[in-house]
Amino acid sequence: MRGFIWRWVLNGIALYLTAQIIAGITLDGFAAVVVAALVWGFVNSVIRPVVNLIALPITIMTVGLFTLVINGFLLWLVAEAVTGFYVDGILMGIVGALLLSVISSVLSAVFDEK
Image (cartoon, rainbow, N blue to C red):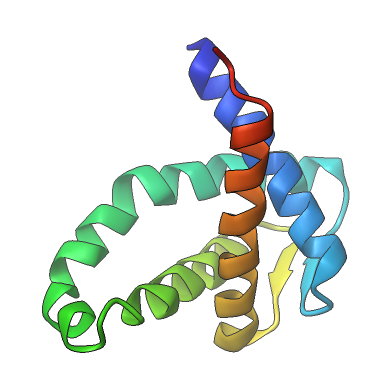
């Protein structure tokens, strides 16, 4: 349970930083950050593996680049589901998902829970 909360906090910080850096991504307040981080974590752990499996042939043909499109689409989808979280289109979703994964990786490396 502690690991889940820790990942949730790190995802929230990464999401907030991504929204501060990219003009096409907006978060309206702390509640939007908390809910968006929770939904993003759910999407990453449950929905993304299924979508990646379904899109595996396209991903192989594009040498993995289609994964960027999947992640961008899923970030845009989370923004559509969460009130107060906005992504201006799929392109901003792709750029945001790329930056979000970089920031999340850096935060995870710096603040390792062990």
